[in-house]
Image 1 (spheres, rainbow, N blue to C red):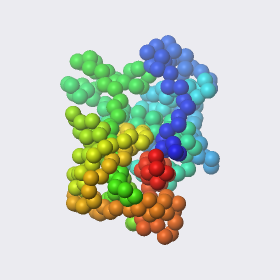
Image 2 (cartoon, one colour):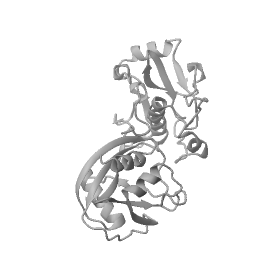
Image 3 (tube, rainbow, N blue to C red):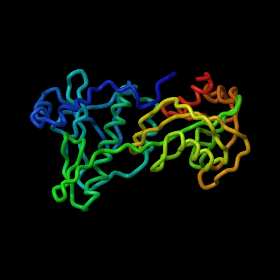
Image 4 (cartoon, helix red, strand yellow):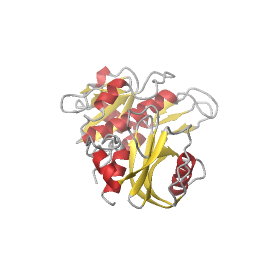
Length: 289
């Protein structure tokens, strides 16, 4: 199975640096240290899909330590205090997503989520006081109530309901014409992954699901989700659509999915791009995984 997009990173995150200010200063003073070039939250790529880097003297704000790449310290810059970036993905980033070098995509996912988190969490969630960066950029602390805040990951289930040689897919209005993909939704408090899969499929399509099996996971840095891909065994095929969530939902055969993944003009729908874990999930299902 092809690894999902934004995975496969090889950078040493070096947690030890986060706890030792002297080690952080040593990394910052390394003449080889590099700063990730970001335009807002968008990266800059060269012709080979590699991330662009510059010297630390170009940092316009506090530095966030990303780790070591073959001994070279890597950093990003935190946004100005209290100035979050616009949400979503820009048209420029959309044009880059299928050009990323695999390892660089994983590093960018971590950097983007971390930078964006600082932009959205400049104030203490307990008392409202402005917080300060510590742990080399991997936490914020409150000088008033001393609460510590850490970057969080939002778990999302993304899943197929299968029944025999057919699989359930849906589409949302903003998607490109003809695209159908796996259903998805955030885990709710007090819920297991399996329970979330069953609930989301029933809520969106009215299909009851029994056994659930895990396939793969993917960091999704828009802004900081963890996509948990699963396949559930459908107990029936009668679709009851939640029109607040989906524009349409249909059953497709294994051959339908195979044609869509190959980009065949005869395919009855368009599949998600390879960097999306929905593509990985459909590939696993077609291959019988």
